[in-house]
Length: 225
Ligand SMILES: *Cc1c(COP(=O)(O)O)cnc(C)c1O
Image (tube, rainbow, N blue to C red; front, top):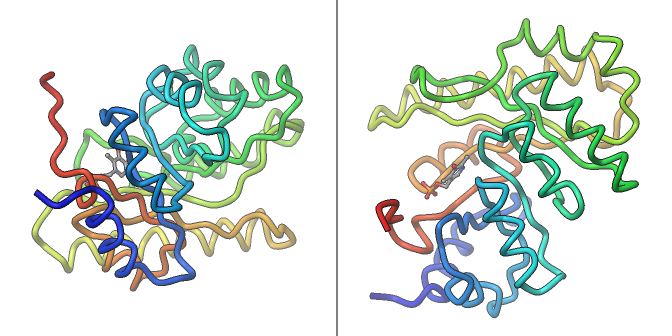
């Protein structure tokens, strides 16, 4: 098997320079993640709050940690002291909790709104109406410790490339609409987080600014251990 350094460099060479690569290290032990860190990479993504907190504690402090999974409100406190970007805001309730926790830490935490763009029921995310409701709410207007930096979405897990492309194009349109309606004057609202191992090239063609890639670098994940 090729080393993680080799697979990382291969993946990196296929990603355009203006697209940020989030190396998804969920379920992987620190020693394996360090192989990619030693290549000079500093941006990693995790999807479990306590796993992320633990890795943050034991790993070099110049890592930029992104949270990419479904986040429960009672777990927010584990990550707000250090997290760089939360990709997965899918309710006003969650955003309120992040704001409250960030305030305690005296931080402003960057967040993306996660949209539901797939056909699979299992995926999380807002629809346009829910996003408008969130963004026009009084409580959102009073939040001083979060910054909305863009949108995130996951396409359906399918071989059908036309469908994947359509779903990513939809997310790009959502981004444009939300920007025009709510963030026209913002310098911060600019990110579209879309694309994983199997669909990152389509995502980049459709305007992704951040791809989240795990298995192409670390191999298939083994959840049973
Ligand atoms: C696991 C995960 C990824 C990475 O998936 P790969 O197919 O291993 O590249 C990206 N985004 C989210 C939200 C994930 O949970």
